[in-house]
Amino acid sequence: MNFELTEEHEAIRRTAREFAARSVAPIAAEIDKHARFPKELVDEMGELGLLGIEVEPEWDGAGLDPLAYVIAMEEISAACASTGVIMSVNNSLVCDPLRKWANDAQKDKWLRPLATGEKLGCFMLSEPEAGSDAAAQTTVATPSGDGFVINGVKNWITNGPQADVGILMCMTDREKGHRGISSFIIDMNAEGVTRGPKDDKLGIRASHSCQIFFTDHQVSGEQLLGKVGDGFKVAMSTLDCGRIGIAAQALGIARGAFEAATRYATERKTFGKAIANHQAISFMIADMATEIDAARLLTYRAASLKAAGKRHTTESAMAKLMASEVANKVAKNAVQIFGGNGYVTEYPAERYYRDAKITEIYEGTSEIQRVVIASNIIRGLA
Ligand code: CAA
Image (tube, rainbow, N blue to C red; front, side):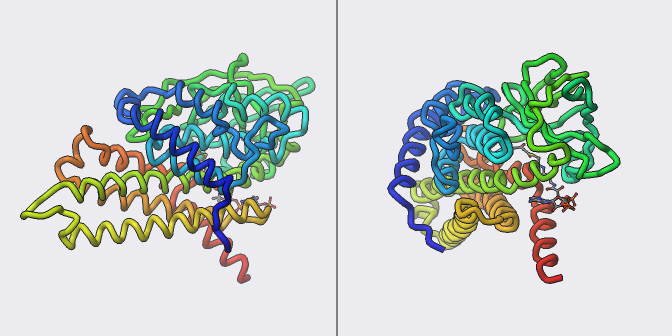
């Protein structure tokens, strides 16, 4: 597999890195502290084409490949993981299923404004009793007129408080289990859709999530994404791509924590020398660098398979599993290297540590990634 970056990849890295240094890093601590949604950064990401990176120019996107998306995600998440996930949800969980499953009329109406950042999207799969067991949907769409009427509750919906458009999974036929799930494109400002208060979270505090309530919410048949009964496949194939985005977010968190800790270790002195020159710290630095590179290679591999149009379920799960566990280990060691300064909000280490945790939970916990990897391996052998 060849990971030579093209001039286009280098260009998006420059764009994302400059944006991160100019606009994101200076406010990352402040938006985390106040759990403030960074609307100004979302607007700037829209102008830079970062909200529809893989969307074809025909639908007003940047028309770049999955590797370009991963590169940009890592750069932005290294500065601020909250901003990273806002971007990731719009790109992977909303634009991507629309690219794959929507018809041209739906793309014209919904995808175009999402790709430019004029509108922001969210993805509504999880429910209070349907997290890891995604097929256990209780939100129901019942046929009504030329469409459906929807009732139920969705949980932990990232971008939920701000979203204009949502991709919803819900039951259209309980008898059929996962084959009775369908997917709809939702106008989040329409009647019958309400939002709960924003969740008070451990990390990624500037990215907001909330419950979404559907009360006799009427949708037309034109809002059905794919066919009736396609919803579980829409969700799973979307998560195959979303997990690459979260792997890249985790990579960014790990790199941000690593760079901050390494810089600190060369400046801080104990026993007459920089702590980086004590073997205990230098070995941590060596392990961090090695594991970050390993996670990056797995993430680039999953992105390259996606670019080649190949199935990448297992490779995406491996990338997310590895990168999220590396992010947690690296962030934990970064706090350790910072010592007392790692435990106070004056330095960034504690923020990376808090932000890293969610990458082992959302878009499938580490346990679910292991289920996906193992079952695909075993199925291949059977
Ligand atoms: N692509 C396409 N189809 C797939 C698929 C994939 N990756 N994975 C499974 N399927 C299909 C199967 O082929 C099967 O098809 P048939 O109808 O032909 O039988 C069907 O889906 C059912 O497959 P399984 O029997 O494997 O399904 P399952 O019920 O055992 O569940 C699971 C599998 C992997 C555990 C799944 O439930 C899962 O991924 N759970 C985790 C959910 C998750 O990641 N949630 C994240 C929420 S979004 C979020 O977190 C966003 C955010 O905040 C940022």
